[in-house]
Amino acid sequence: MRALSSFLVSLVRLIFGIIEAILGIRILLKLFSANPTAPFVQWIYDFSAPLLYPFRNIFPTTEFAGQYVVEFSAVFALIVYSIVASLIVRFVAMGLTSRERR
Image (cartoon, rainbow, N blue to C red; front, side):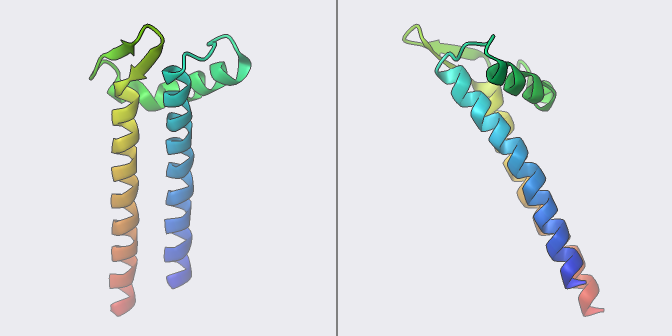
């Protein structure tokens, strides 16, 4: 049972780690006004769009000093996904350890 718990926790961390990395890269690309027609930038924006869908228009996208763009919805999404990942890891670990005690 311990191996299953460890595997599930690792899997959740991997999946949410990838999600958080993609969102983090998106935030940085937007912040420094990366060229949206560049293939890598386009891929990041396309891949992260469904992840941001539930958070769209919660907060405005703000421009500072005429060149720095902060997409607050993406920052909020990153925080929410981090919290959700932590909760899932905690519940998986808690649920499987309680089964081991039985």
